[in-house]
Amino acid sequence: MDRSTFKDFVLCKALDVISGNGAYRKYLHQCCENGEEWAQRVTASVAAMNQLIKELHTTVDRVRRLPNSKVGKACCEIVFSMHAPVRVIPGWSTCFITECQAQNCIDVSRATKQNQSLPVHPKFGYFVLMLFYTHRIEHVIRTFTKLWLESQPQNSDMTELTNRFQEQTEVFDKMYDRFSEGYAHVKASLETYLCER
Image (tube, rainbow, N blue to C red; front, top):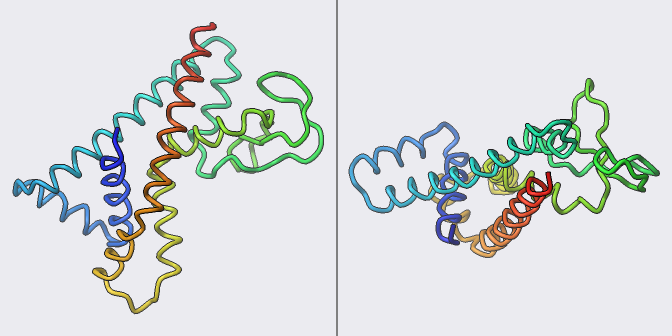
């Protein structure tokens, strides 16, 4: 997946949020139906990103299906959570995966009242965050866009907003870099774990 594919994906999801009522999605679909090259490229980019995410989910599912897989349980908690796993459990905790004591473990449980905390050693912090970021990238983009919209002047029209959003090339580049690095790290880590079993 290249930088332009990622940027198309980001813009597609973000402009759908900015349009507010699915108008962009309908517009994109109509332009694609009319054979417009840009719309077909964006649609192909979205499909390519969705395929990458699906491949990652398949790998997580393979880990989850291993007998007594603590890594699989932790991964499932992360990928099905609506919130990034950034809650730190102060003091000493026993890591759910390694069963070792560690300070300031990361709670990867879903943030609900019914769930008990699921502490994971802080050495897994990068993996945990990148698994959430790469698997939940659409959610991340939509949330980022909603927060960005809150910072914009309320009298801005749709054209101004879309133009202003698209000017954030440095942000898109950083998001792409994190996604590429994170995806490679998560995929390699899970594949290594599977090979060791």
